Length: 157
Image (cartoon, rainbow, N blue to C red; front, side, top):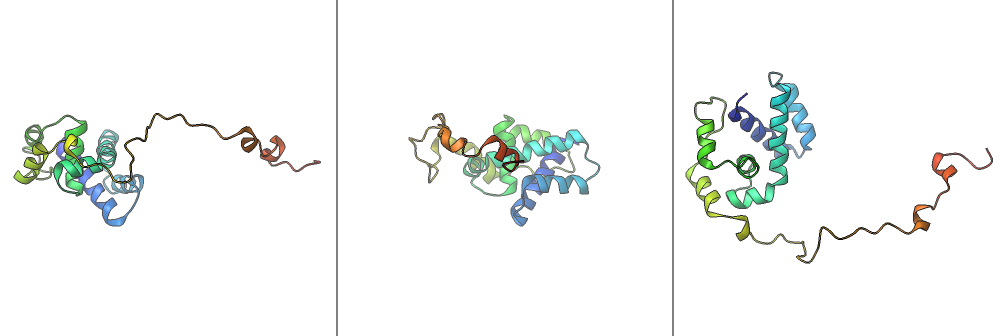
């Protein structure tokens, strides 16, 4: 399977997830069961595109100016894979299973917008640090139950 087929499959899976509100693992499994021709390498590559698209959903929606499965999949390939709209067009030429190439509006949105210009994400404090140390609960809370109680043994047995 070539890149076009993998991209089309990822778009199909992302659209299914949006339409039916289902987890990625379930959608990927069902797609794999109904498309037996796809080998393990193809399934892994499709899964990578899908999970990259989910991780980058807000970023690609901003850059592509669209919140569609197509925009997410193309945006994930261009962000993670380092592809450009031109390199994707070249890779998709002649592939009968590929989705249509990026149109003028999608291409213009991708090249005009950068993540540095994106609006801040609501609900996130800029002072919040992801490297803040996590303090464990006090020992009294962790050892509330005796080892015997944790194993399920009743007292006196």
